[in-house]
Amino acid sequence: MTIQDETIFRRRLTRHMDELRWLYMELYNDEGMFDQLCADLHRFAEARGDALKARDLLREADPGWYQSQELVGMMLYIDNFGGNLKGVRGNLPYFTELGVNCLHLMPFLNTVPERSDGGYAVSDFRTVRPDLGTMADLESLTAACHAKGIQVCMDFVMNHTSEDHEWAKRARRGEQEYRNRYFFYTDPAIPAEYEKTVPQVFPTTAPGNFTWLEDCGQYVMTTFYPYQWDLNYRNPRVFNEMMGNFLFLANRGMDIIRIDAVPYIWKQLGTGCRNLPQVHTIVRMMRMIGEIVCPSVILLGEVVMEPVKVVPYFGTVDKPECHLLYNVTTMCTTWHTVATRDTRLLRKQLDSVNSLPRQYTFLNYLRCHDDIGWGLDYGTLRSFGMEEIPHKKYLNDYFLGLTGGSNSRGELYNDDPVTGDARFCGTTASLCGVEKAAAEGDASALDRALRFDLTLHAMMFLQSGIPMLFSGDEIAQTNDYSYKADPDKAADSRYLHRGKMRWDLAQRREDPSAPEGRIFRGLQTLNEIRRHSPAFSPSADIWTLDTGDDGLLSIGRYAEGQKIIGIFNFTEWDKRVTLPYDRGVFTEMLTGESYTLQDLTVPAYGFYYMEQRF
Ligand code: GLC
Image (cartoon, rainbow, N blue to C red; front, top):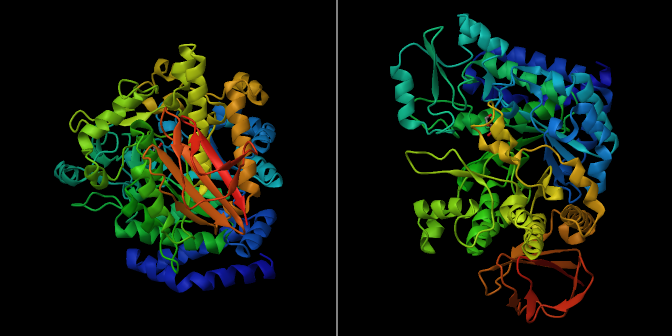
């Protein structure tokens, strides 16, 4: 390292040393392993490329860069979108055309195709799946993205490895050093004891939390699929090695590391094995390790839990953990609102997000690669007269298209025969009615469905946080049923909404009369508005308004002399509304037309972005 780089490294290390050592000793009480970790940090800092080091310095000077109103993300599967890493690189202008400048590349590390869980069963953290390319391709992609002002996000699957990972293979062969990296038990009593308190993640597709390994006469802990072996973070070797993998990947040019399934990483007999205090110690250490070696890289926590469990993953203002978290409650509450046409719970949810400190930044999304789970605020719903079990049944029936005047098409996911619980899958367009209307050749239903699709996106864009689109949703892609013919995927209905990018349909993205063009051009406009309007600043005031009609949701934003009032109609009826305190003339930002908000008609499933300047 140059003297200058060495000085920078020391400065960053010194800043965190006391706390890092304290937390490490609290968890592991092992000086030797701590020294080894520090030596690794130095090694990865030394190996970091010059362009990334320059990025680190810039972002240290602008630590809130990721809160920018210019950031709009998209998640995509490399093979579905571009065939391989080179194909994605060749198609970067597509994102720029749409106004997307942050790509979450879905898992691309080595995995065994028939046991991959969509790439979340990693067999080697340091190589790319061969059909997608090489680490060199990845580095050229991240460099090309950076040159175009595009950020790159990848998954770091830290809770488990695949059973095909070198460690797992050696553990299987009986090497104690490697068995100690997982949870192995000969005595069935211990797994049985765990099962008493640990809930199931995949009750239908992978019941139970342990897998019996016939060949070694042992049980191994497998919270997710049987081929995903849980890592034992009580072992400092596991922590150190996994931090090495994290930094290795960060050094390939990542801007955002999504820490997958992070609430699960610490296990303790007699507990639910989720969100234990030690998880927060580990995430806090990761945050400091990142700030020491690669401060331009931020952490996105995947915490699919109820709100009181999610927010602690931001840490505190003095001791932050994740930079970004998924806004999972708003996501599922949005779909609840679609099915009920009752915006009360969503308004309450947005109010609670708006009351959090502004540095807590959420990633907003309508749907992702996973199912939609009904993690709603049932206490509040009960006060509206909606009970949990029948309401979940109503929601699932609604999105199956069976009840409530629904136009949705989707499929259940992991319906639990014991609890009667189920989650849900489908693309945004299919859930909004596009698939059904197109199949029935009903032009006016299609028009309404597309309008609703854009309305939901517009509502998501206006919320506090960063919007994340799902590849294909920008051209209203519908469900892909082909997974049913693939024996490795057929049991997992999440593949319904993980279809191949339909480039044939994307050809029509500039045609305003085509469904693809309507959504694509609509999103382009929303992106433009978001990027250029002062009221979208991350420090803007954000509030919800009482519309006097539960079918309508209204969100206000204000900054620097610009006020935007968004009004969203969740019903199939045109609605008249008066917002008594918002007087004077407003300009609708998509059409440029003038309105007052006194006796305004909001079209069925439609929305307005009303603007006033002061
Ligand atoms: C995360 C991923 C999901 C995967 C699971 C196990 O929740 O989003 O797709 O199945 O982790 O790794």
